[in-house]
Image 1 (cartoon, rainbow, N blue to C red):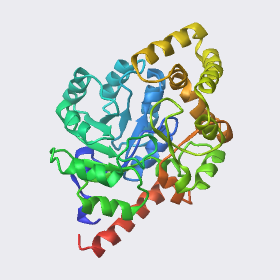
Image 2: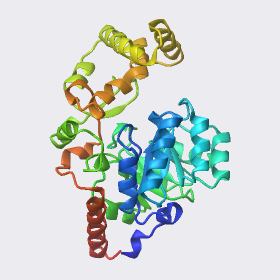
Image 3: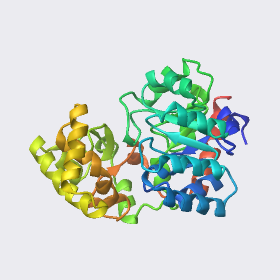
Image 4: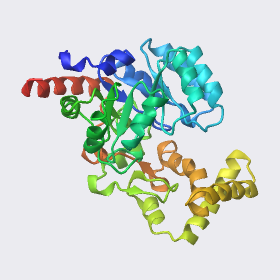
Amino acid sequence: MHKALNTPLTQALGCDYPVIQTAMGWVATSDLVSASVQAGAFGFLAAAVMNSEECEAEIKAIKSKTDKPFGVNIHAFQQDVDRIIDMCIDYDVAALSYGRGPSPKIVEKVKAAGLKCVPTIGASKHALKAVNMGADILVCQGQEGGGHTGYTPTWLLLAQVIDQNLGVPVVACGGFKDGRGLAAALTFGADGIAMGTRFMMTSDSPTPDATKAEYLGSEVTKIPVSTKLDGLPQRMVMNRILADLENSSKIGMLIRALQNGMKYKSQTGMSMTQTIKTAWGMASKTDMTLGQTMMAGNAPMIIQKAMVEGKPDEGVLPSGQVAGIIDDLPSCADLISGIVTNAETHLKRVGA
């Protein structure tokens, strides 16, 4: 292996190669995480969309398949988050990843137990704050990234964060799919790359075949960022559902939110009055409309239509722009092997 592939990231996480498989809701399951870590990458389990019982079952499943280190992703405000954190400590998980930062108390507890804290940031101003709170590694996701994303392109964000010299490994995320990208990130000054869409588009991904086919047929220029799903900028493949959302008026958004709220109610048992009251409370504290806050509450249902039920024409497709230039579905083993070989070729070519 080329010596440049042994970086502060691999040393910190204990993985073979400086590649992170990100935590995508309903995609980064035990099957995908096991396959990615066995291939030499570092994988994060998407526990942010799980309850504590589901998370424990998935952690056990990973540990039954591999003894390599892996991480768990959480949302600071999810139900059972304290139980899930305790579980990660008890099961000797290697790292915890998160977006909107958990409380300093949670970070202190995790670090005291020896877990690495790996937040994802989308703006350079958040880098120092994250490190001061206790981040051991920073994943910098540029605008090209999938799902919720920021406004700064990957390479510009990466430069801004690297130039701060914060003393922790910096990982480039957004727009990566191969060894050429890994080599470019390393020579640019990053310590590795993180990929979501590329791992989702593998044969080891649990994403239904019909949905994968939509990603394979996507185009780079037709994977826009929209705020219509939940009020936050989110990159998704353009399809009928997203087009309808984009063309919806505020009244139309509210009607659609009420319709989805009824479906959400049937799954959770929450009354419509409770649903509206919760949404109204969020709307009164933000610049989001009532329709947007209600959509935010049940957006997962719309995503699951495509990502779990295999009905891409009835849901939305969170995606990085890189999906538009991916045309195959390799196994994680073949993907990582190809990335490493390709990266070594490019590193040698530039004399790295």
